Image (cartoon, rainbow over all chains, first blue to last red; front, top):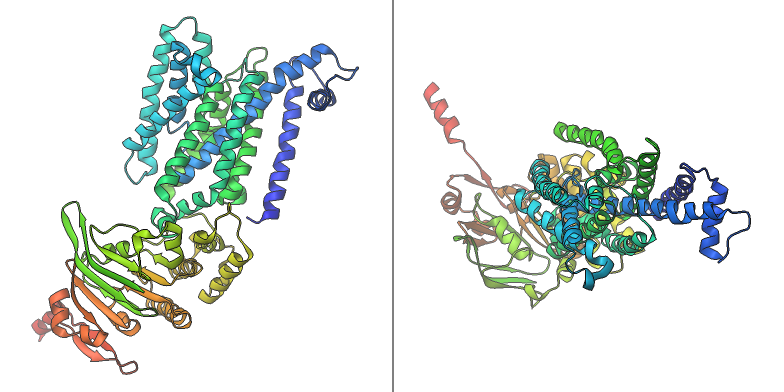
Length: 339
Length: 267
């Protein structure tokens, strides 16, 4: 894709992203207009004081409750989409995604162990849960790659993912059952939710997302080369083994941090990269930034739907993404068989 | 240009290559022929640096091949592997530009030279019209030309080809080999290619190396190598050897044994 096309596409997506954030924040039990929302955001970003026509309660709803949640949803969506792009690129498999591969379950298990035991919390601080999640995700990744055949064909990869998911799922349910106090907290990891998330979580995820995005984008040429096949990539002078391992760990890491904050939300990493590939082609130089933006938009709307559909009760956001993603996955599976 | 001595390669405990020596001068074309499973593809893997020899050493321009960094090596050696490219979602131009990878250090944008060279090679191989088409919709012959364009934008000094004409009809077999020959003559490119078709090998290669069971049987000019007895020992067929009326290189005419026997019965 040429520079100016990427510029227009990403510009369009970015505007859509800003609009989505603005609109998502206005929606909820208390009605707040778009203008007020942006006034509050701009006031917090650039000035120290609020404009006089803004109510303190409205400010609290927007700045303390809704905005961090919406931004977190966007960051999680972008993270999962990037992880999906990397997994699909490296495994040369259009059906790969952190959820289907069982990586998310591994991360959730790691996170739950951290919460239940509290080991290492003194040293690691707010990074305790994400780091445990990363260990769990890496373990799941290792197991999946061990279980699948060497050619990493779609069928065996998905089956291994199912097995790993079942294994880690049983761990999760087990820990859920034995711990009464932490039930609420752990419950989120199973279904995925942005309830009770605040700025602190945003500040954990955003730097991870930013760094992962830059690294993944930096290696988009290598991801393209891997698409030609390992041998061709080696012939072109690429250090295949090392770069592949690094990118797999990166994808697991970004998945782990997203999961440790919002739980296992499925299918985002599958659906989004696919739609972008259909729109603008398979070149990772455009696929990575556009998927990140589209993933963010998708998750903002998914979370808004989760908040509003059964208001005042909330749906886990994973329900929404699975409702959209599972039929999509079925379609892709059918398409694969035709080949 | 390229010198390899005493190459030995084992896969598990099976010996695939047994003390192979290769010498190629700059601008020369060496053809490697031999029956299936004789170790031809393995030899290409060793010469391309893709795999390491268990014994023996390879020198490229007087330097050990193992001392080259991967990208440095890819600036000198381009490879066309036997398996070609699978189902890939990229356009022809994107694939050809990937050949510039060994020269790109900063992030991933293509320099003006990258784009010009890709353009030039697509023109040279005659696939300019498919620039924006996905590689997957191209026919086998067009695809192979795109892959050759990708190898040539690497600006290699040595080109290794493993069966560049498999799956191609006779028209494209000649198109591909003529293209490579023309490029070789104009650019002093050294070529080492594995070929199944001995007649094409005799027409396009200066030197032929015939291997069987991982050992060199004979090597030399096509006239020296293509002797009835040697062909019989290596391939277990008895061909008739003719002189090509135009190029004066040996050509093999195969006689089908079974077919003749059938005729004998009828008469």
